[in-house]
Image (cartoon, rainbow, N blue to C red; front, side, top):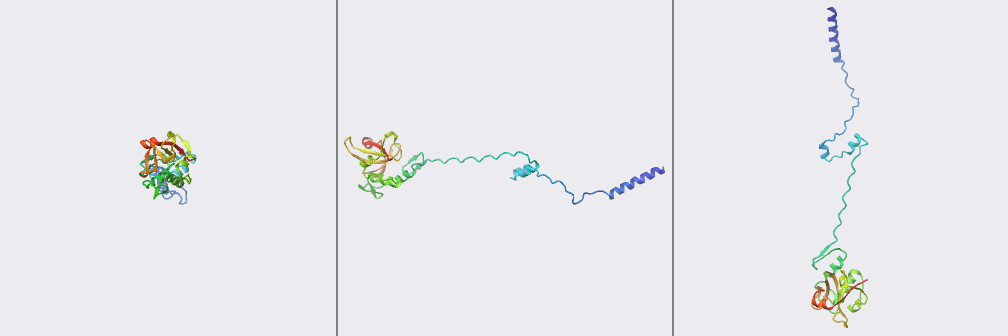
Amino acid sequence: MKKTIILSILAALSLTLSYFYEVTPAASAELPQPVAAITPYAINSGQDLTAALLEKDPLIKLPEPEPAPAPKPESEAFYSKKLGMQFATSKNKTLVQTVASWLGTPYRYGSGSKSGTDCSGFVTSIYRQVYGIRLSRSSHAMYQHVARIKKDNLRTGDLVFFKRGPNQPIFHVGIYLKNGKFIHSATNGGVMVSSLKEPFYRRNYYAGGRVI
Protein backbone atom coordinates (compact mmCIF):
# COMPACT_ATOMS: atom_id res chain seq x y z
CA MET A 1 0.00 0.00 0.00
CA LYS A 2 2.76 2.37 1.01
CA LYS A 3 4.63 1.50 -2.25
CA THR A 4 1.64 2.40 -4.41
CA ILE A 5 1.27 5.81 -2.78
CA ILE A 6 4.96 6.58 -3.37
CA LEU A 7 4.69 5.69 -7.12
CA SER A 8 1.64 7.90 -7.55
CA ILE A 9 3.44 10.84 -5.95
CA LEU A 10 6.48 10.35 -8.26
CA ALA A 11 4.28 10.22 -11.39
CA ALA A 12 2.51 13.44 -10.44
CA LEU A 13 5.85 15.13 -9.73
CA SER A 14 7.25 14.00 -13.12
CA LEU A 15 4.22 15.40 -14.99
CA THR A 16 4.58 18.75 -13.21
CA LEU A 17 8.30 19.02 -14.03
CA SER A 18 7.71 18.20 -17.72
CA TYR A 19 5.35 21.19 -18.00
CA PHE A 20 8.01 23.63 -16.76
CA TYR A 21 10.87 22.16 -18.82
CA GLU A 22 9.10 21.83 -22.22
CA VAL A 23 11.67 22.33 -25.03
CA THR A 24 10.90 25.17 -27.54
CA PRO A 25 12.82 25.79 -30.80
CA ALA A 26 15.49 28.47 -30.67
CA ALA A 27 14.67 31.76 -32.35
CA SER A 28 17.79 31.43 -34.51
CA ALA A 29 16.83 28.02 -35.86
CA GLU A 30 16.49 28.01 -39.68
CA LEU A 31 13.27 26.70 -41.06
CA PRO A 32 12.94 25.54 -44.72
CA GLN A 33 11.60 28.27 -47.01
CA PRO A 34 8.32 27.43 -48.74
CA VAL A 35 8.43 27.01 -52.52
CA ALA A 36 6.24 29.43 -54.44
CA ALA A 37 2.90 27.85 -54.89
CA ILE A 38 1.71 27.46 -58.46
CA THR A 39 -1.97 28.14 -58.21
CA PRO A 40 -4.62 28.99 -60.80
CA TYR A 41 -4.52 32.54 -59.42
CA ALA A 42 -0.77 32.82 -60.01
CA ILE A 43 -1.13 31.49 -63.54
CA ASN A 44 -3.94 33.86 -64.46
CA SER A 45 -2.27 36.88 -62.85
CA GLY A 46 0.48 36.94 -65.47
CA GLN A 47 3.19 36.20 -62.84
CA ASP A 48 6.42 34.77 -64.29
CA LEU A 49 6.59 31.24 -62.82
CA THR A 50 9.80 30.20 -64.60
CA ALA A 51 12.10 31.03 -61.66
CA ALA A 52 9.88 29.19 -59.17
CA LEU A 53 9.74 26.10 -61.35
CA LEU A 54 13.50 26.02 -61.89
CA GLU A 55 14.14 26.52 -58.14
CA LYS A 56 11.88 23.58 -57.38
CA ASP A 57 13.42 21.35 -60.04
CA PRO A 58 16.52 22.68 -61.95
CA LEU A 59 16.20 19.85 -64.52
CA ILE A 60 12.63 20.64 -65.44
CA LYS A 61 12.02 21.07 -69.19
CA LEU A 62 10.08 24.20 -69.97
CA PRO A 63 8.19 24.48 -73.28
CA GLU A 64 9.93 26.46 -76.01
CA PRO A 65 8.22 29.81 -76.80
CA GLU A 66 6.35 29.77 -80.08
CA PRO A 67 7.94 31.98 -82.77
CA ALA A 68 6.02 35.11 -83.67
CA PRO A 69 4.09 34.71 -86.94
CA ALA A 70 5.80 36.27 -89.93
CA PRO A 71 4.13 39.51 -91.05
CA LYS A 72 2.02 39.12 -94.14
CA PRO A 73 3.43 40.97 -97.14
CA GLU A 74 1.41 44.00 -98.02
CA SER A 75 -0.37 43.89 -101.32
CA GLU A 76 1.39 45.84 -104.07
CA ALA A 77 -1.83 46.45 -105.93
CA PHE A 78 -2.95 50.05 -106.19
CA TYR A 79 -5.87 51.93 -107.67
CA SER A 80 -5.62 55.12 -109.68
CA LYS A 81 -8.74 57.13 -108.93
CA LYS A 82 -8.05 59.66 -111.70
CA LEU A 83 -7.61 56.97 -114.34
CA GLY A 84 -10.26 54.67 -112.89
CA MET A 85 -7.90 51.69 -113.16
CA GLN A 86 -6.66 48.96 -110.82
CA PHE A 87 -3.00 47.94 -111.28
CA ALA A 88 -1.70 44.58 -110.03
CA THR A 89 1.66 45.84 -108.73
CA SER A 90 3.26 49.11 -107.69
CA LYS A 91 6.03 48.72 -110.28
CA ASN A 92 4.60 51.51 -112.48
CA LYS A 93 2.97 53.56 -109.71
CA THR A 94 5.14 56.64 -110.32
CA LEU A 95 4.45 56.55 -114.05
CA VAL A 96 0.70 56.10 -113.56
CA GLN A 97 0.44 58.89 -110.99
CA THR A 98 2.50 61.22 -113.18
CA VAL A 99 0.49 60.72 -116.38
CA ALA A 100 -2.73 61.03 -114.37
CA SER A 101 -1.62 64.46 -113.14
CA TRP A 102 -1.52 65.60 -116.80
CA LEU A 103 -5.13 64.68 -117.55
CA GLY A 104 -7.01 67.61 -119.05
CA THR A 105 -3.89 69.45 -120.24
CA PRO A 106 -4.95 71.23 -123.48
CA TYR A 107 -3.42 70.34 -126.84
CA ARG A 108 -0.80 72.75 -128.13
CA TYR A 109 1.31 71.95 -131.17
CA GLY A 110 5.08 72.10 -130.62
CA SER A 111 4.80 72.34 -126.84
CA GLY A 112 5.35 69.88 -123.98
CA SER A 113 4.22 71.44 -120.70
CA LYS A 114 1.11 71.35 -118.51
CA SER A 115 0.00 74.65 -120.01
CA GLY A 116 -0.34 72.85 -123.34
CA THR A 117 1.26 69.89 -125.15
CA ASP A 118 1.17 67.90 -128.35
CA CYS A 119 1.43 64.09 -128.41
CA SER A 120 5.22 63.75 -128.67
CA GLY A 121 5.76 66.64 -126.24
CA PHE A 122 3.61 64.80 -123.69
CA VAL A 123 5.50 61.50 -124.10
CA THR A 124 8.96 63.07 -123.96
CA SER A 125 8.03 65.12 -120.88
CA ILE A 126 6.72 62.03 -119.05
CA TYR A 127 9.77 59.90 -119.85
CA ARG A 128 12.12 62.66 -118.79
CA GLN A 129 10.22 63.26 -115.56
CA VAL A 130 9.69 59.61 -114.56
CA TYR A 131 12.73 57.80 -115.97
CA GLY A 132 15.22 60.57 -116.68
CA ILE A 133 15.26 59.46 -120.36
CA ARG A 134 15.39 61.97 -123.20
CA LEU A 135 13.47 60.75 -126.22
CA SER A 136 13.44 62.16 -129.73
CA ARG A 137 11.01 65.06 -130.05
CA SER A 138 8.95 63.77 -133.00
CA SER A 139 6.86 60.60 -132.95
CA HIS A 140 8.43 59.43 -136.24
CA ALA A 141 11.99 59.79 -134.89
CA MET A 142 10.93 58.28 -131.57
CA TYR A 143 9.82 55.10 -133.32
CA GLN A 144 13.31 54.60 -134.78
CA HIS A 145 14.81 54.20 -131.29
CA VAL A 146 12.48 51.68 -129.62
CA ALA A 147 12.21 47.90 -129.65
CA ARG A 148 9.17 46.69 -131.63
CA ILE A 149 6.50 45.07 -129.45
CA LYS A 150 3.52 43.04 -130.62
CA LYS A 151 0.13 44.41 -129.66
CA ASP A 152 -0.64 41.40 -127.47
CA ASN A 153 2.62 41.88 -125.53
CA LEU A 154 2.19 45.54 -124.61
CA ARG A 155 2.98 46.44 -121.01
CA THR A 156 2.32 49.54 -118.92
CA GLY A 157 4.71 52.26 -120.07
CA ASP A 158 5.22 50.99 -123.62
CA LEU A 159 4.61 53.38 -126.50
CA VAL A 160 1.91 53.01 -129.14
CA PHE A 161 2.32 54.54 -132.61
CA PHE A 162 -0.23 55.43 -135.27
CA LYS A 163 -0.12 56.15 -139.01
CA ARG A 164 -2.85 56.76 -141.58
CA GLY A 165 -1.69 54.38 -144.28
CA PRO A 166 1.09 52.04 -145.48
CA ASN A 167 3.07 54.82 -147.13
CA GLN A 168 2.31 57.51 -144.57
CA PRO A 169 4.62 58.63 -141.77
CA ILE A 170 3.84 58.03 -138.10
CA PHE A 171 1.72 60.96 -136.97
CA HIS A 172 0.75 60.10 -133.37
CA VAL A 173 2.14 58.47 -130.21
CA GLY A 174 0.80 57.63 -126.75
CA ILE A 175 1.72 55.72 -123.58
CA TYR A 176 0.10 52.33 -123.02
CA LEU A 177 -1.62 51.76 -119.65
CA LYS A 178 -3.46 48.40 -119.54
CA ASN A 179 -6.41 46.47 -120.97
CA GLY A 180 -6.09 48.16 -124.37
CA LYS A 181 -6.14 51.66 -122.85
CA PHE A 182 -3.50 54.34 -123.49
CA ILE A 183 -3.00 57.98 -122.53
CA HIS A 184 -2.06 60.65 -125.07
CA SER A 185 -2.54 64.25 -126.10
CA ALA A 186 -5.22 64.39 -128.80
CA THR A 187 -5.86 67.38 -131.03
CA ASN A 188 -9.57 67.29 -130.12
CA GLY A 189 -9.30 67.07 -126.33
CA GLY A 190 -5.76 67.35 -125.02
CA VAL A 191 -4.40 64.73 -122.60
CA MET A 192 -6.94 61.92 -122.22
CA VAL A 193 -7.31 58.15 -121.96
CA SER A 194 -8.50 56.33 -125.07
CA SER A 195 -8.94 52.73 -126.15
CA LEU A 196 -7.13 50.93 -128.95
CA LYS A 197 -10.53 49.38 -129.75
CA GLU A 198 -12.04 52.72 -130.76
CA PRO A 199 -12.58 52.69 -134.56
CA PHE A 200 -10.17 55.57 -135.31
CA TYR A 201 -7.28 54.13 -133.25
CA ARG A 202 -7.96 50.52 -134.26
CA ARG A 203 -7.84 51.54 -137.91
CA ASN A 204 -4.69 53.65 -137.63
CA TYR A 205 -2.73 51.61 -135.07
CA TYR A 206 0.74 50.85 -136.44
CA ALA A 207 3.00 49.35 -133.76
CA GLY A 208 4.04 49.14 -130.14
CA GLY A 209 7.48 50.15 -128.96
CA ARG A 210 9.48 49.62 -125.77
CA VAL A 211 12.20 52.04 -124.71
CA ILE A 212 15.32 50.05 -123.88
